[in-house]
Image (cartoon, rainbow, N blue to C red):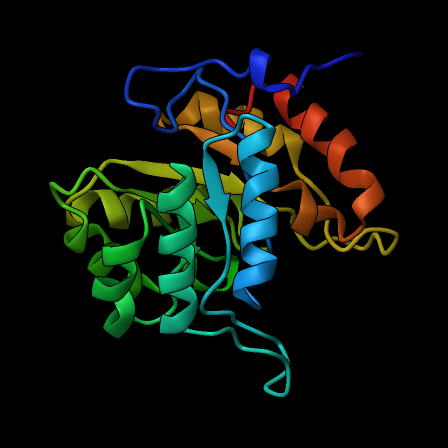
Length: 226
């Protein structure tokens, strides 16, 4: 099986947004660590022909001793670098108090796996994005069923915005050779059970750089939208 991930193969829509049937590639550093690191990565994303720069300004970590992100400084870096290269910004929001700041700097707000069931946050984000033209990427919790994931998306939609993108990022199984298990069957079923675009995150699912491209290709073969 050969799946083309070059810029020429990426389908487009008039608004350039993440939509069913219009393949998008989102790339960038897990965490924004410095302006130099971000700018270098952003140039690679731009040169590859992709339109979305992803970077974490606020980082949820299992260990409180791990790097938690640059916060509002990281948001400004993302905004400045992306605007210079005409890229859209994708970044995570963790706290309802940070929603306005993230909306100011980002085109797509990401709700991470740990917050999929944070219903207060889902409702606040949905209400804040009403009429803004911005989107939400809702990552599947790593212990969430498909039904729980889809119902979480309804919290956002009912609060005010239907620009929701589902993201399969791997679920926790007994397998230990990868960080998580990418549920491609879940991708197919999510597209059948909802009208929302569905993308895959091969990086967090694998936890291994050598598996990112093969898993990305498998996601495209499963008709993922990004």
